[in-house]
Length: 150
Image (cartoon, rainbow, N blue to C red; front, side, top):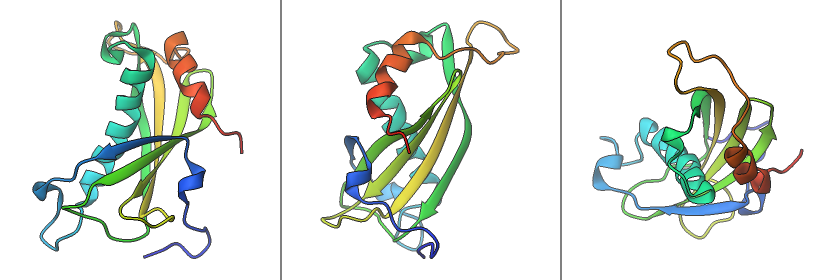
């Protein structure tokens, strides 16, 4: 299942951590985490961090981040009942977008079981056509401590 051309990320590659409780329903018929659930965990890791770090309901800001791109590298199976630790780091902070990486870990190992890429693009929350707009200051301040320039 691993990708031969890139090494598996390790715990040292991430800045912020969140523990996610797995649920019985998170597993698929084969007894491992359903593919869609990985994306729910990525979404939770990013948005819970933004709510906590900014101290505001980010859904109600005049400018909101919408998901423009996601991906996942599956490196080994994980699933219920053990909790998952999600490591979060920012790869890029642009003028109107943020690129996150999220590593999912289960158990004591140092290598990630999966790694996600999650791109937020900021748009006007009040305009139905939602043109791209600069990242709000409170978001920028929250994500800069997670940024590791490559």
